[in-house]
Image (cartoon, rainbow, N blue to C red; front, side, top):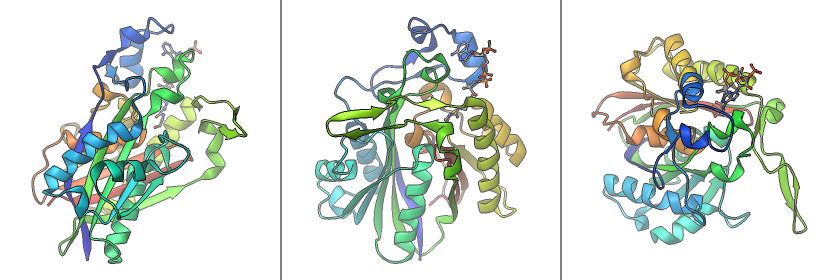
Length: 310
Ligand code: UT7
């Protein structure tokens, strides 16, 4: 038994916000942001709009493409760093909106690698015959954990959601998947805060050692991709959309043509767990084509998967 992707959907809130707009808040320029990151714009959730709200239209699109309804699902795995509540899981809130009770529903926290982790768990559930139809979601309101005084991070992140439906299949869809983590680097990309007795303790904003994260993401996305490829050449490459220079470096090391690589970071910036499914949803893969996914982020966490499109 294999799992295969039967539908994908993405959702971006509101209107695009250009680099010049951010230049009104911090000392930066469209030229600097484009040259160092490839980002031209990003989207932000409206006040009161949370990750679960962004996930709903993305999940509905993925289900429609799969020809399914919420009630058909056996599980919902929701990858997010910015959940709606401390508890219950945002997956449970989404499950209620989709009319998907009583399927299993839980959140998963692997920051920018979240969607790859959700894919790995969903695939494992299906291969172990514990589920036949699993909705995997990556959704973030990263704007909520950004320090708008810090120009080195605030230009990088945006809000959005992406989702995919995994189904049981006799033919390989997910051909290989690899996930990994190294918690010794926890402080290089973190929001080091928690709630205690009604108060927020710590620093509630994203702090990043940009140069270390850049090197780590380039090395680990390449390494994980080589593991799942095992010598094969993919038809398409959909990497985590954080910085076009990172994507370009990984693509070159793997010798994948530029026109076969997703570069949607320009339009939606880094949406963390949402970035891989958002980038997938913009492509029109053909049946039988192979698609390489890769991601890396806070933890550090990283992962890759090789899919055959069905
Ligand atoms: O999902 C994973 C999450 N994160 C990432 O993937 C990000 C990984 N890191 C990066 O993408 C890059 O390290 C950055 C885009 C964050 C920074 O690019 P860089 O080429 O490594 O620049 P830098 O940190 O070496 O900074 C160069 C200069 C500095 O000035 P000085 O010290 O040389 O005078 C910064 O202060 O650019 C300055 N700078 C800016 N200037 C204008 C930093 N941010 C900005 C800005 N606008 N927004």
